[in-house]
Length: 138
Image 1: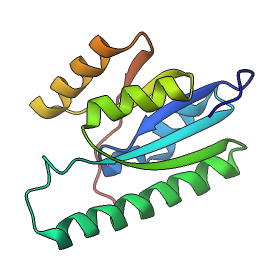
Image 2 (image 1 turned 90 degrees about the vertical axis):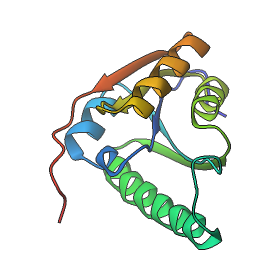
Image 3 (image 1 turned 60 degrees about the vertical axis):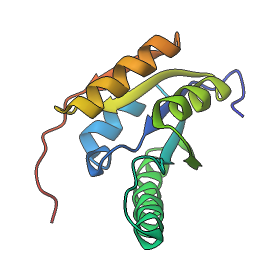
Image 4 (image 1 turned 180 degrees about the horizontal axis):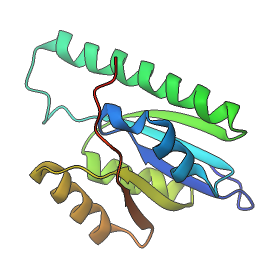
């Protein structure tokens, strides 16, 4: 749990675009501590067991890359992998860690729009959507 004197922010990992230096610098600019959250939502996973295992592996790799980048920037980083509903887990972890903001990479799809709406209706924590160019990473 966050110490009260540290400014913490939450970055939910919803896509590969959170692993973008511009986004990470902007989202963590005023933070001492960054909480990374990846949620495995079994309702959204329609594949067999191996598909979920692959999701966990990819999420852990992505969080490790982001954590390394932020650590070099002098940020304290905590990576969390949770099971459950994405909006609920975002709100729960942000409140538990006393985060001042939840930072998201803006996406143009209905699932994302519904998720943002659910999060905003469920917490007083400020939700900020940052625009990141969606270039294909090599």
